[in-house]
Image (cartoon, rainbow, N blue to C red; front, side, top):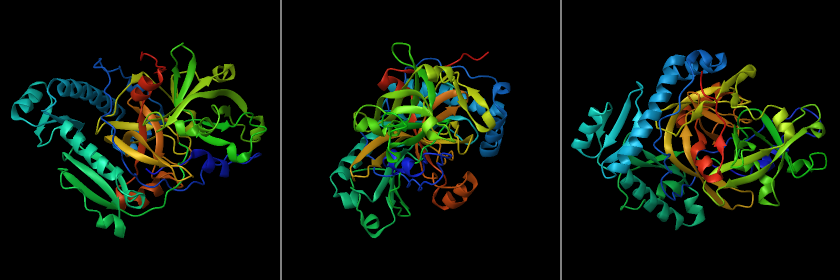
Length: 450
């Protein structure tokens, strides 16, 4: 997903008096240049967090699971839990036998699969209760190939490197997939021969677009007091997960690109919008930390909540879906390829999909033309304008926050799926919540399931 500064697009769709309109956004172009700095850090091999019961899922989420995944609520929770068990096993196997481990995923039937490079490792995985397949290249080998590819890309002229949308690890086929713009320059690229197992796919050329806000309930940001802030400095985004910082104070974990002010002078102030009169919006906190590929390759922001935010209920471990329904978060999770996921969003409510890749980096392009790299995971869940910064869950576990999408400019997910089907369907970039917790020293607020 090619991203750019959030505040400029948000300001264009904000009126001083009147309903905040976040639907007029350009489509975020499909994934852009990848500069892999290293593998995603794995979480500690603790027991997976416990899921809530199917009866506790809100009706709207159940409908989305059935519509988008063709699963019952029980199957959805079971697969989400199975994915975390697989992730824990995979991390242990990779730690103990790095040369043998080649990847792991849930199959279309929901069964966990482990890819390894030797028959004895495959036999071990089968004895441990997993399906196993033998692949030629280890996960470490694929990541090394991706590193070499990105070194090569980094040395290309800007007009050439801009034709490379993304590169990611395809664990299903044990290869690197390079997405190149279908232009004369893109088609003429001669990839380095030293990189093994590379597949090239061509995407329609699309101009860079502004990122679209995505996620749960709306908040607006201002450069100081919203009443005196110029319209072009007011931004629109959405809350992610409720959390606590190292001192135990309440925070909200969201997308870092929403804090445009921080890259100029301190952190943005955050308001609950008054949709009839933006000047009367209620201040609930401010960004105290944010990064968008600056001092890290993550896109996350930490909003420290003031008393008004607490009074509003932003310190509860819930995310909001359609028609005011809520889902209680019971723990955290890591991205596992094939795992079922759902996201909450003010524009598209609950939509669901699967983790397409757990290892993706993409380029954010600022108005100035400067670029930086964002790391995360990709899902097939549809996200629309108005969903940025919001919550991605697997089962009832927090998985990440929304950073970008290729369907942001669509009026609805039905049209987005129709338009994008020829080029692979909808795709959303998420930032792993465990990565954010480790980087920012915060933790997601959770409730133990009954």
